[in-house]
Length: 77
Image (tube, rainbow, N blue to C red; front, top):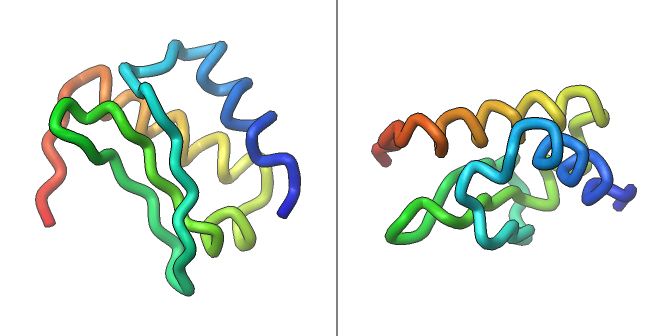
């Protein structure tokens, strides 16, 4: 797995952390990205997502999750 943390760190430093206290990578055969936790303070991505996205795509996904977190958008399901 490449240095995804550099991409994530760049987005979080540019946009703010969005309230995330943790970023978890879970093992899954499916590409997963989600905001979890009682307070929406965990960003969860799967190893499969990190494998299939290039840095620019990963940056977009993380930025979108930061905005969702800041705006307190509710994800159902």
